Length: 113
Image (cartoon, rainbow, N blue to C red; front, side, top):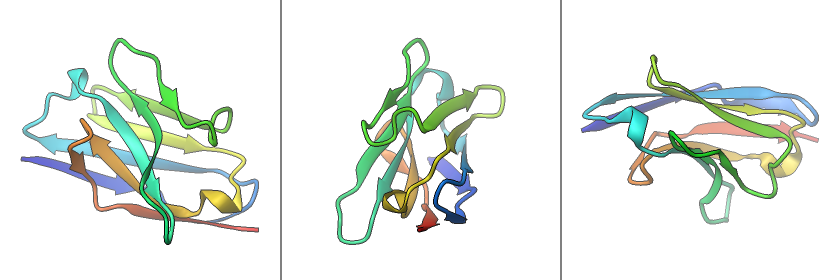
């Protein structure tokens, strides 16, 4: 079983920054599995924000390129999402993903304009 615990969401003004964290535990092979962040805004489908896999460069949605940075701490089994220059349209519940098959509980991000 895989457990993903997210933190770091909250309320921020447009132009501000937040950093999300997700720590994986349980039956995991952290190093070789893709980790990522997805988000779901009210009334919309869940969408990929950023993913990263060992040996490959990060992959970002066009809407966040240049503003968000995904990174991993292999020693801590943790993946981060640094979100800068936040916009109102970034408002959503953000979910951490392990391998695209396991999901965290979600952490809400609200950006006020």
